[in-house]
Image (cartoon, rainbow, N blue to C red; front, side):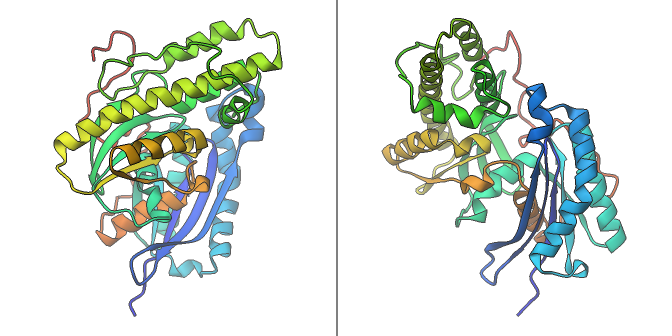
Length: 357
């Protein structure tokens, strides 16, 4: 029986300090031995969003303890670790630098390989932690900082089919929650409030709904919520806004995902079609249910990460590290933080007013 690699994963791209120890079994299926995540919600909520300098300071204060706890909880000896994988981007550069520097120092001290990981690639592969996911597949990545459709052919081989031209979906959820008086991060609470509201009460805009292929836009929707929120007179109004917002998002994603199916099928002539949804917003149960129904209508197999692995975590970073380790894809210790690192580095930048679709 050959020794299976043990990978230390480190994540610090935004406001979670995380570390994980991961290996695989004899069948090559990933096994998470520990997965520690320290949230900074209490630090940032009074500001209504993440303050980069405070986030970086919190990472510095916590990272030693988080990594040590991940090692202790895994039950392994530190000398048995075969490689360190750290998030190098995208994210807040002051935050990325903390985990990146720690990972490099650890690798240098232990004389083991260092592996840089794209945070988005961690999300892209995260369903492998709880399912038998094989390439190729269509990915919808929806989080606080990113919203895009990607054709995933293999590790490191991505073609972007569509992206947001302004705000990310998770940001739209959080900003809507803030306008409704919900403390940061309020996005997950929108779904709960929506259960008590009338989804037909407010007719909200659906930007670029009938054009732009599977590109997305949420800025106009957010502006509409801002205007409506100024006339809130009761708790029921808040419930109705939340319900109308949730319903509008579902309708947008239904239409845009159907467009993505067509674009994906045009470049991938496949008998078995797989659709993966990952990122923090993938934990939204109503969105999950709608996308499951859409997949059933279009003969796609649907795969989601478990809810506890939708948000930022280090198990997904260690997983990418494991895949790269087996291919001997190691990095130098001078590898820089890449705050705008795209999965499809050939994709055209699409953001801001005046974008032509």
